[in-house]
Length: 258
Image (tube, rainbow, N blue to C red; front, top):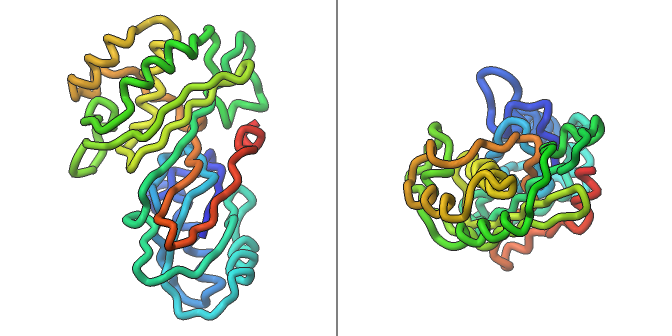
């Protein structure tokens, strides 16, 4: 299944001891349609407040339903801030997490002297002018395979800090900045910590040489602030072509966020 959600009301994807995880709600809804307890696996767990346009999950079931029945049935049990975009039967060797080859996120910034009440749950409002060209130069430093210890949360449980960023782009559309990043995988809060560091550069507070030093230091204390979660959205997850996982049309994602 392809899952879309607004993360503002939830404590992240994963099941929670305190608060509500999106996983819990989706599992309950699928279980209702399957008429049996069903557990799901996602492509990548998102933090509290983070949104998704292209989250992918898989589950095993003996229930016989058409793709249409799964999608409409599950959606009928979901709140309006969580939605199933598609359903597809896959072979038993498919795994939402381990079969994925890349994950893509976008981070949205509203760069204006005046704040916006309507954009407050989707964009990080930054009052002072950002220089996106400086941020793009900094972004180039992080592309490739690196040790990203400086950009992961202290609570991150990943066994290795090595990740490969395939591309990292900063683009401006009038008052809006969109930071697009794709990697084979991400560490906990890695994207938000990268964005926070690029913003320091965009504001002229730090230089590209500083970013190089941060990357080489492998020390989270050396990097910039953690960008707020509500500006981040999981856009897409890539899989080998043989699985024929549908692609969500993300050309209008900016309009979705606005």
